[in-house]
Length: 383
Image (cartoon, rainbow, N blue to C red; front, top):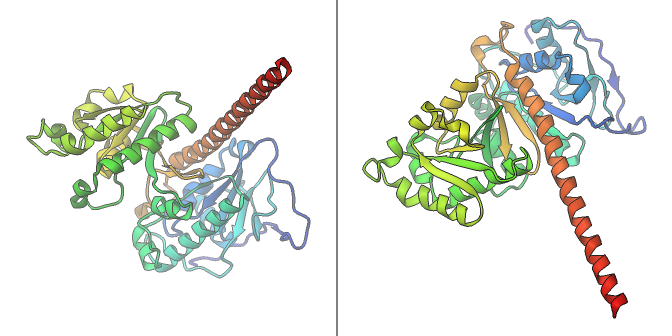
């Protein structure tokens, strides 16, 4: 580590040493926060976001990392009033403080602004620890700090990114990378693949799967009773009736028709440039783009600093900021925490929305069962 930092945070005994403390009170969800790449701006924006006065009132934050590494970055951002409690695990948490679960107690060589195998290894271990606790129910949702693909590759991480890793870990058949900011929600039919591979990856089956996930998450997680989704074309001018490409007529339009037959409100395909340029995007609850930059370029142009990446289609809540490790800003105390703060607030909202939806559904089923029991009782009595 480039400099030594003294910290006096309390280390709470493990569950083998003291009785387990009740989980968070007052409906506050427990947010697991991954450290991301320790050589980037991840922990800087995490700590700045956690210094927001409202955070501890609405959630219990749990950073998966190292007290030493967190202290190092805390010194950079000069947040003297921000304190945290070191923990050996997430079994017992301080409910009104920032918690740091120490997954790595060794000294760490921090090389700000550079991709290294150490940065990738630490990011991977932080992510794996948070996912393990999410599966165990020790935390309610996770917010992931940015990772660097080169660092992760150097560390032997076998996935392209968070989305692909989480899809596998939670045994989802498919997932959807969804960018969210206020009323704008942009999903990606294909995400982290080379542009040359996009066309052959666009299939009717893939689009139907993505639209099903999109429609479901808009209903369950965002509260739209009958969400309407715009589908963008792949080619310039959405193919110009086959003159500039036939994917729209052979694949995209048939997928939309099939989704409509299944009760979904899907429309298009729309030419991407005119769709965003004319403001037509404001008329839809969600927009499905065909590839990464087709969706992210207009999304970031319209929302930069407030955007959130949400992994739809898996059984848990995971959000992240819409920016990367920004190695060029690392260590300069210049990184804007707005996107990470929005990612935290979004995770809390989504967790509550999903919980409320399932509770309402459960109560509705129970009401139907009670009515059926009454009707059966009346019939028996009548006989």
